Image (cartoon, rainbow, N blue to C red; front, side, top):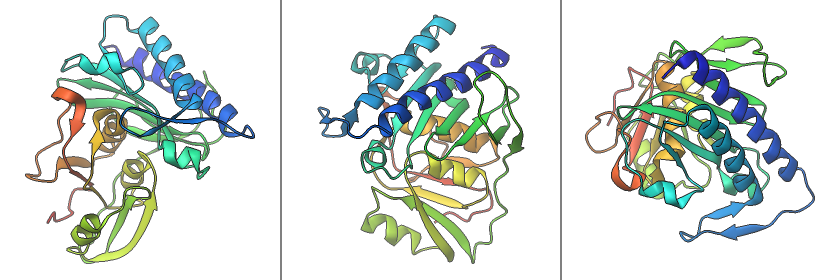
Length: 263
């Protein structure tokens, strides 16, 4: 893969998809339907998916594409692929809470090596550069002109006073019980893949997820966090979270800054 071509393409498609999403988000009303797994889907999910998929297939026709909104892609198997969640945090979108993201990642041999996470309602854009390091781009986000970027670096954690981020919509007693094993200074909540990005920026040290997720939910945020020096590991054995699994389901996982003493 030519990363000098890949990164501008992912960035531009994420921004264009964000525009489509915000057009619907800012409208007086929009329909919400239930998919076969009872998760919600809106016209924004479908419009963003169509735009991103068309752009990726045109630019990288020989690379396998996996996307949440195209069920036929879920039957594919590959170790190297592009993977898309066009609107992660649909519940946040429906409730107009703003914590939703566009996610596009490139996975190579089971590892998410490049990715972009764009939170259009918040105007926050995180991505890996061609060299694999992660940045947040500031200011007006032009489609074809890269603005000022801030390099991302995970925190140096104090295990007696950790900052923890957890899900807004999927918080449960098991998660609270696990977090209680740590020395916690403070906690925050966030929706969608923004939780990975908060660890990547150093705004949080630890993000545990004891619940069902799919690879398209996590790949882009995982790539951004890795590019900032962080880790995403399985909850059960603390080995790196791998991608390209049959069915695209993830096990429980922990995203963290190095130095956090995992329990």
